[in-house]
Length: 138
Image 1 (cartoon, one colour):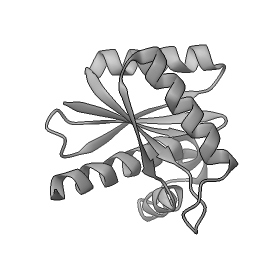
Image 2 (cartoon, one colour):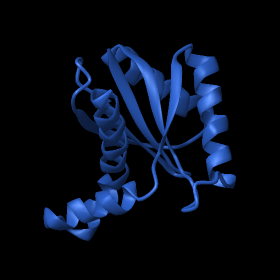
Image 3 (cartoon, one colour):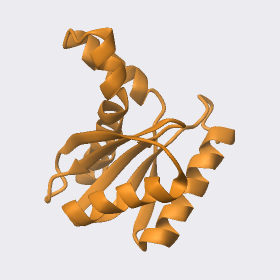
Image 4 (cartoon, rainbow, N blue to C red):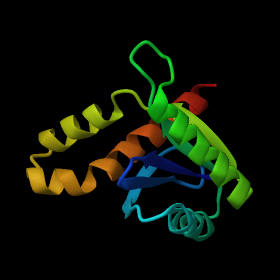
């Protein structure tokens, strides 16, 4: 069963997908957001293409673990996805994933311009891989 991982931002959505066995996450692309209907359609296209059965969305939490306004917006978007696509939507604590993504790209010596273009895709990969690692330990 494949899982689609999303890093949802105001302007873009990073997209990653798991392998069929659920061991590894692979970054796919970054969706430039236009409106909810088009965003949902693009996500649906990826779900159909990869036969994803679950959508995992990075949930921005405050450092103390509480959910703030950004987290509430993401949870509402997840609920909308669940209703529209009839797929299970789960959330994963995304604290520090963007920091980890930037660090990994710096270590790979990517230019600032390249990092800016792919940071959301890389962050979605970190989000999904963290979840896959957690479920594989169970």
